Length: 386
Ligand code: NZQ
Ligand code: ZN
Image 1 (cartoon, rainbow, N blue to C red):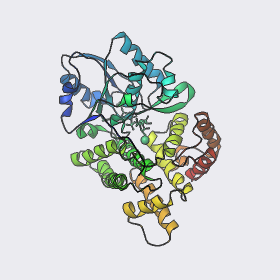
Image 2 (image 1 turned 45 degrees about the vertical axis):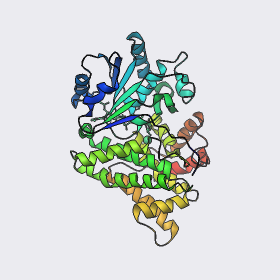
Image 3 (image 1 turned 180 degrees about the horizontal axis):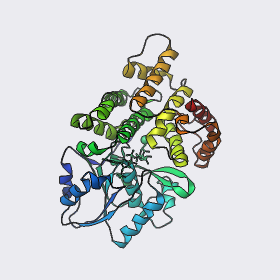
Image 4 (image 1 turned 60 degrees about the vertical axis):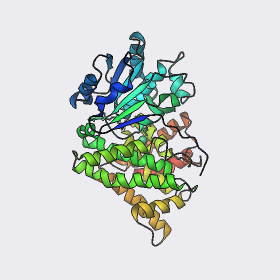
């Protein structure tokens, strides 16, 4: 096992009705900015529940944080923070609203050009407003981690940054809030969480048995429960298990003490920035090619994955690995996601542009061995077309 530090300060408040408890987590004299997206929280009653829980507080609202939150939009919220003297942020949403609010938290305390926060990947952050979360979409894991991803439309750039300053203080995980998700977002969430586990598991063994088996437990749970959430959307137990999986998949634990990959995510961000493909959909498209191209580097772990997740172990090693990759693709398709770039109208002619953007964003040595260069990504993209 590799050396590591693990500290996750986010308080998880799990279960039905827990929004009622948030007042205990926010100072009574706080001036709170409630942030949300396009309005799902109005339709499903989450905003009303929050206002009831925070009766008597000084509340201001900022609506309209879009999926893949835009830098340009978030700066408007920073202006409100300053003019209204806001000192606590409360995000109601999925990864986009939470990530966007993390940026607002940092930019509100930053003296220079706020783009530097993102472009320096968080290293220049010099403080952040405290932030709480009511999670509405289990997927990104942003509710209890120190990452955020923001898009600057004018540059077609989608960039992640990191800081321990942006761990939310608390996150409400009420599975009933996810009942209103459209099927496409249920699918996105399950596949994104599955891919978060793979990015931290599908590398090379360092004898980290706890992290490996924890990861395998999350994968098996997502495989079992994902299709059930589509078939039986009001099933509380199913929604609970998916919600906890998504949070634990990216709260930092399973990636501690082990090599991390993240190449699929970095290439996926370029596909979202350039072509507007949903985050999880980019991952479903790239995963089979990424694993095939790195079969030798990942061989030992691919064989472990094939055996422990899919029960495949007899016969030719290469055939076993190929079957495990095919089964994973089939799972994503069962979750109703497409698994080929051509399904989104992309062709070989798009590849140079994608590679160009990776180079521009310094994404030229990806993966756990830092050997996923643009030339390797070219092969992945070629396979992802088929
Ligand atoms: O905007 P509203 O009206 O709220 O609708 C949203 C949005 O259209 C809707 N939705 C959310 N909860 C709902 C709901 N609709 C009905 N009922 C509910 N309960 O779902 C749509 C998508 O929301 P979004 O937040 O964009 O989805 P997701 O949670 O998948 O987040 C994606 C973003 O997270 C980033 C992605 O790159 C992307 O920008 N990620 C963040 C990470 C992190 N911070 O650690 C890691 C991830 O790998 C990922 O990169
Ligand atoms: Zn993701």
